[in-house]
Amino acid sequence: MNTQHLFAHNSLDIEQAKQILADGELVAIPTETVYGLAADASNPEAVKKIFAAKGRPANHPLIVHIGDVAQLSDWAIDIPAEAYTIAEAYWPGPVTLLLNKAPQATSVVTGGLDTIGIRMPAHAVFSQLLSSGMAVAAPSANPYKKLSPTSAKHVLKSLGGKIAAVLDGGDCAHGLESTIIDLTQRPFRILRSGPVSAAELSQTLGMPVEAPQAHSVAVPGNVTSHYQPNTRVRLVTLEQIETAQPGNIACVHISPLSSDFGFKTKAMPNEVSQYSHDLYRALDEVDQWGCDEIWVERPPVSDEWLAVHDRLNRAQSKL
Image (cartoon, rainbow, N blue to C red; front, side, top):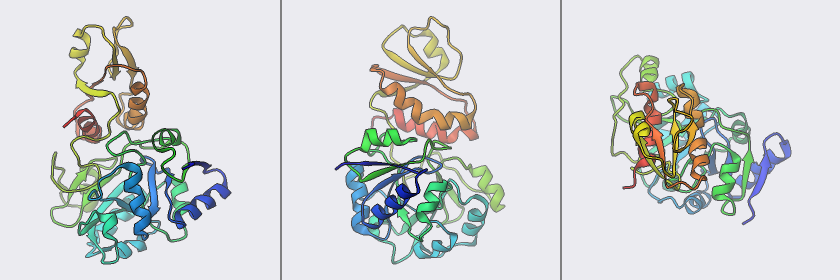
């Protein structure tokens, strides 16, 4: 398959992307989090192509992206009032609501589950694609368990030849996937950490929102090994870095290092939003250096860094 490289600044390219989706094919499109691999969510045969292109297990659910809050009831039932409170506060934006699925929501999208993840993306290009009322299923536009792409170039490198088109809208603003909050039972809980924290959601709702460190609910991103470059990742302390012998290691660090350091190095921002924005891009860059391992200095430990720690812990796991 010849993957077309379309550009979001060209209105004709956006219309072409809409037509490709309407024809039942896949388009990688930018969101404010990462690039998503989109298919018409109402077309089961089109959605199946997502799993084939990514090598993703069919029982791993997808997120449905909508362009208007009114579409929630097209895809979910038993919607609590708090869903609309969250939508008013954070949509369009990087929060996914886990709800009970509507009967018409195809099981291909939900991985056979009775729940469905729904969000309204904030990216202007994505909004244009959804303006006709279409809803799209769109996981990250990467091979299963590999690094999520934050640029069209990364998508083309990993999925070129497997999908119909990439709509290039530049770099993604956040760089990490959306927060997933489970609204199907109380107390509500975070099932995937992301740009919006449990503390923020608790304040918005006026009630506690739990944030378990681990759970067994089948939602996007909840597998032990995920977000991985091809080179093995190891999380280390600054002391381990400073006392290590020189070697063929790529070191991704926050703390200053001496100029004669014995590893190839990649400095990272010490502010969480910028670090999140740069993380996947940095790991993709150093993955191409041909090193034996990638050592990542553990970031600060605090609630605002939870999403970063979640991604890095899964990136280093080889189970």
